Length: 103
Image 1 (cartoon, rainbow, N blue to C red):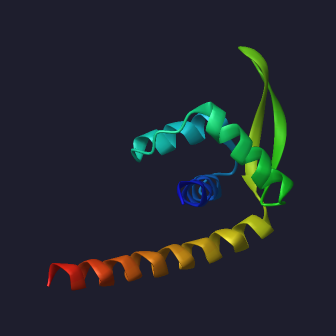
Image 2 (tube, rainbow, N blue to C red):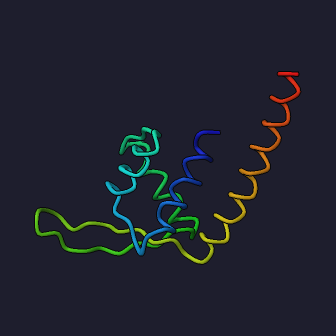
């Protein structure tokens, strides 16, 4: 379940920018209290790219090796929309159950 939520969060973060560097994504996740390590993020980014949901470009860095910047694709935008709908349905279902339990 967490993996699916992380995919949703990663796509959402990247969709709000022109492109995103991995450390920027990690920072946004951290700000939202979702602690994710690089060893978790990079495989997810690779899988999302391989599924056609993300693209990337290399940019030279003044302070080290080139950096890979990710951008959401049209397919990724469509998937993000579907994931948000599914997430909202799940939240509503859990809210309904928790309301019944509290009664």
